[in-house]
Image (cartoon, rainbow, N blue to C red; front, side, top):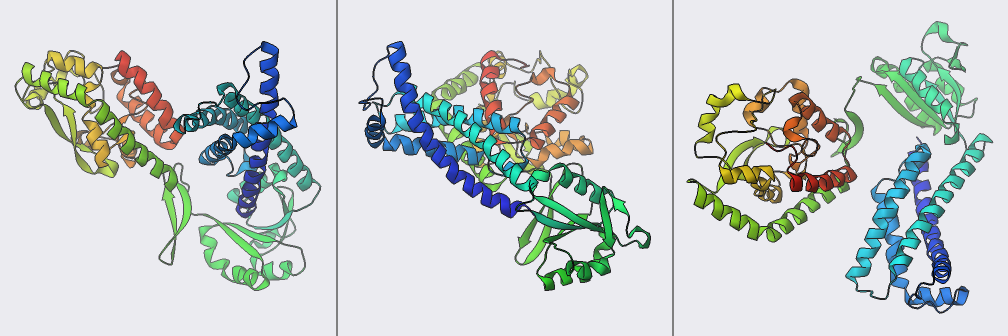
Length: 485
């Protein structure tokens, strides 16, 4: 309903933000010059004078820096979905996104400067540009929100709605519209198919008639859009009303109360001409998944190259200190239960799996998993490998193959999955990973049920930013061996 307006507004905002960022670049030039003069710092390259002529000369000599700065900001804001549903965002969320982008854009611009070897570029100036940009963009967003709110509250650019339905879900819809007057939506009246509802008020709006009266009402009132918020049992009743709206050129939208789902989200797709409603529990856009997979490939390949000397030394130590193969291979459950072979450096004595039965009564974890702090099957070298997660380095090959991701729920054994409760199996709806929230939250110190809850929290709140935070925490956990058995 408001998505078309939001998309247009997003395009306009990107253009406006581009101009604001260019303005920030110029303003940062003068602020930087003032700070240098006040604190007696050295002059920056190409800054001939703190005036407009100086700014012009500086900009012409740093046009690449300006382009990198503007591109980094606009790309990172779009990447975080900043322009999606902007009108419904809380001011705190907008400010937090701008703060986060300030840090990321500074790093991105600095990386471009390093990549192109712009050695005369001032680091102070790059940081000043981002700080000024954040302040100007925050002010611009506040001003834009106030202007749009004022326009809609004065009755300009409003969309008149006719709401069909007065049930619980329809009432919730009406309340949302009322609470967000700045969206520019105005409810003209309601439709209910019950005889006794005509003339009554629901949530402050009058019932104008029944479904069969919709064509008559559309010709006598100014209606821009008809919204059907009805139960699925009404589907056969609204056919003629939708056709009447089509004949009169009135847009329609249907919110069907099909199922009361707590987790899955609904989206409409098209399969070779067949319209489909999809219910998905894991929400991610294709470009986000593409970036996640691209990062997995680049990151795992880079680590395999950089850590190859260490992995060679570990392989030699394992071979010299314990009989048996260097690598331990085991079947694990991947995405939606797919079986794959997981690779690890062998950290236990040969035949360890056969001896597991004898030790099950000493299991220190609840649930269907087995963990022991002083497992007698672990070799001396293996104990060190496990403490610092070195034994898991071969799993980088699993990531490279696509069986796993860098960040994701840890892959479970098939026998463990068979003992899962129904709600726990949802952790298989995402590709398993080398590290996840459980890994950075104590690992073996965390009870099994809480471990499962953490994985589901990760799935429900997934974002590229969350993956980044978990990855940073993982480095600390690996270096300290925190929570390892």
